[in-house]
Picture 1 (tube, rainbow, N blue to C red):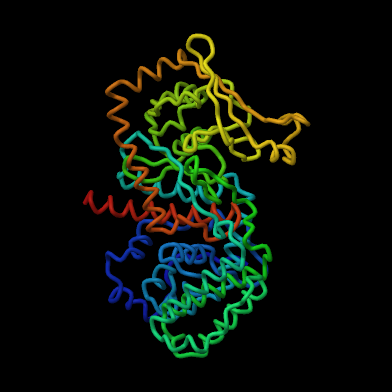
Picture 2 (cartoon, rainbow, N blue to C red):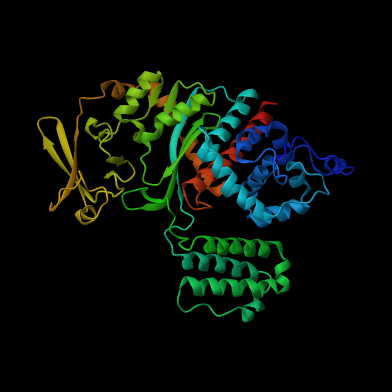
Length: 488
């Protein structure tokens, strides 16, 4: 049965919060500027309203997730810290003497309640949280620009194409290093490292390692406990999913022609005030330019007025230029001759501007290209794909002709097209607006280095969307609080 959470429970000890928690405490200010009742409205359909035991309020459970993201803690550690950290209890709207949840409840909430919401709702949690932060920013008057910047940042899969045993071995090594900082002699008690990196042997080694640490005095150190809890959480995942390293949705994407990553892409739109106004999470192989329409529409739905969009050459495709005219905004994106070729629209082949190569519908990248001059001004580029991959590709019907020794894809560069955009990108207006593009590059760096967004914390596209939702929500609120302070 669902119960609401409106305010702090009545307690004779609540005055302690006024004495202990400063007015400028981040969690206190977060409670002051955000009305979290929208979470109740979003999730109430996933609970029984009039039957069964009382459920832990969804708002409180969601706040636990935010604390995990803000302080980069495991389920066990965020609950443990909430037991004694008064700022955590204040944020969770608990009385000082109230008990905390069992960590397993948080795991179930993340995997069951939120997932049900995401699948049944027209607006997923990612959009909902971003819209809420933009609404708060507009209410406080800290957004007044009508320009957004668009870009994509990649996030490596949690398992990074490594085997389960390799991933567990890395975490075990990290745990050992932390232990050695407090007691190097414990090394003599540790079990022997497995000779063969099989999953079962590595799991057994990790469990024996944890057992030795938990029986020692060094286990009382908070830093060691966090490492042990983290490894235990990963071992539990191994029980639930034996093919832990095979992230079901992660795909190979390319940063340059010679470098790649295994994971996901977050396509972002951001205002000049450095508040993210829209986001779309995709698998790693998706092209950046195709997401422009969604990002603009989502930004407008969040309450933004858009009269200019700044992006790199990935966003200068023909369809995007037409979209900019229809929506009446300036597209500040330099033309790329390959992206602007009209033939490739709806073909399934997508151009990766970082690698300067085309990617087929199955996600395979061309390994070479040849330019051939045609007529007076037109040049044809022919891209070659690995025919051995084409022979066994599940999408080969209609794409690969049986028995063919090569598979190519050709585009023609037309230098006489897009004259309006060519003229615009040479104007002083274009150059002046384009100067602000660096801001979104800095935001991508902030998400990765300050909020752990360089690596996924869970497997699957849904897990990545939840990570993106909570990370962007926290990053936006931190920025909003800073802008409010500057305004005052």
